[in-house]
Image 1 (cartoon, rainbow, N blue to C red):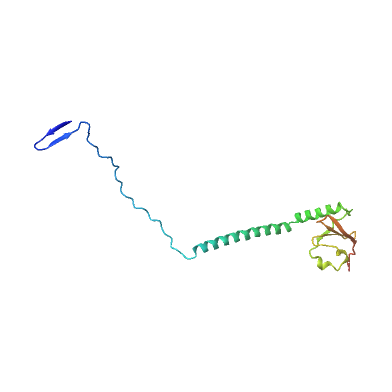
Image 2: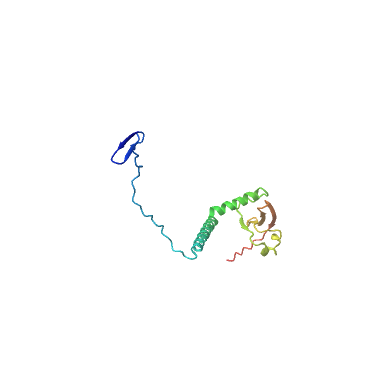
Length: 165
């Protein structure tokens, strides 16, 4: 160690001590003000309104789907090719069970309300959905049940055709 003397004071300096460097500081950035989130005004019943809107949208989609299905069914019912195909399927199924006249195409009807037909002996064992094949030239009617693939009744019919000149 060295000592230095000056008029009244003695300063000692150490050889191992170095001048301390001030710590490095990052330059200060200007403060950016935080953007405040826009606050929505509190409306009473806002959640209820959204729930009602969602319910109405779901109901609308359901009804639209029902409408489309009904239009497709209606278009299929009025399509003559589809009706002819159904008649051919019924005739083919009945032909497997009984010999049918091959020289004419029958008139095919579906039993819709069996309670109105109970008074007629031909429809005594009929159920809703049964098919009636009427061969007017052969004067024969056949009651067919597609659900069980059975012939329920075969009966002769009388066709009243008045031919007044």
